[in-house]
Image (cartoon, rainbow over all chains, first blue to last red; front, side, top):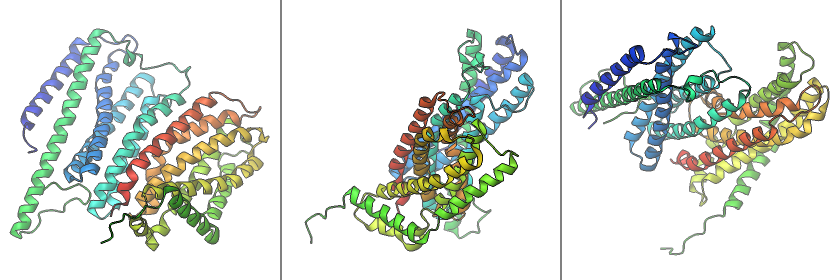
Amino acid sequence: MYGKGLKTLSIATVATLAAAACLVFFYAPSDADQGFVQKIFYLHVPLAIVALAGFVVAAVHAIRHLRTGDRRHDARSYVAIHLSIIFGTAVLVTGAIWAKASWGKWWVWDEPTLVSFLIVFLLYATYYPFRYAIEDSERQARYASVFAITAGAFVPLNFIAVRLAESLVHPRVFATAEGGMPGKMWLTFAVSIAGMALLWTTLVKFELTAKNASGQLKRLRRALDAPDAGTQSRIAPELS
Amino acid sequence: MNGAARAATPWRTAFGAILTKDLRMELRTLRSLPAMALFAVTTYVIFRYALDRTTLSGSLAAGVLWATLLFAAVLGINRLFVAERDEGGFDAIRLAPIDRTVLLAAKAAALIAYLLILELVAVPIFALFFLEDAAGLAPLVPVLLLADLGLAVTGALISSMAVNSRARDLLVPLLLLPLVVPLMIAATAASEPLLEAGGPAYDRFGLWLGVLGLYDLVFLLVGYAVFDFLLED
């Protein structure tokens, strides 16, 4: 049930990402201000957009979990947050590299999008210690879903507040991201986003398939009274 | 077999009952309030030395005030549901014929009361310690009210999630602080021009009050929607 289509999806991901890389390096024009460094934009921004979309997807799965009580939705929510956090780490690192290359500093407080993202990342990073602190597994799943929904509602609010906090006089540094982009850049950007979205979906599917397989294995072991192989994580939801 | 349906207790009655219970208990035992107030005043002293200043204005004043209020509030939030958990209050609420979100509303209202009492003590002392003139305090009141509402709703929600976990005192600040960042951004941005050295200014005051209101609304709705699931057995 989980592994179907994984191979096609993986191939599609690799193909799209390869196409994106080719477009970035050979097709998209260089930015007038920043030069070659600007091309990290095609990595950084799609990662950020996909990570945030992933958090919203996790909230949707959490809603479905609370409404139906089906633990598989909780597993999907957990995996979605897991991968979005990983993508989020990549966003912060690539953002720092870009900041260093174009402004000379590794971190800046006056770029609202970066600060908003940091706050969202910190919030979702608390998901793990939160799950870990609740022992009863059914209650853990329920509370985690409530957290995912609350945090999902928080994301747009956070972006609004941080954006407003920036002085309106401060220049919009990422002018290239605001629609001032020529057509060639738009195409490269679109392909990059598609590639990242496919990558996220493939990794989510992969992780869900792996969890399902180990859940089935555990069930078989239990049925055979065989000893357990390794310690199962206390917080990762089981799929069986 | 009793065919007649028992009428559920009306929302307002249940809300009043739980709120009065909480306030009465706090008045009798004084568990949270003195600690919160003392903590706030001691923190002011620490800030005086940490920043090496005897007067504050503008953004520093807003920052010190709101950071102190926030951390004092966390002390109160930590203790909000402890009595319910220890004395079986959650079971009582589950058994009672009431809408379960009454508990969240009553706890949030109690927390607002604690915060208001805290601010009645902490804000004048802040003015005494650090402000040159108290003209900015009157327009600060709507900011305090809206921020208290947001802090209370979010705090009650997080507290109810954390109370059943192991590391309760760790979990509340961990979960709460990122969630109240937009609230703090709006509260400090609204307060900063009010506490300027030359007298209160009202830069974008309406805008920030609007953001505070939006935050309150979003978390009221979210809290109302999810609280039932937190109380399930």
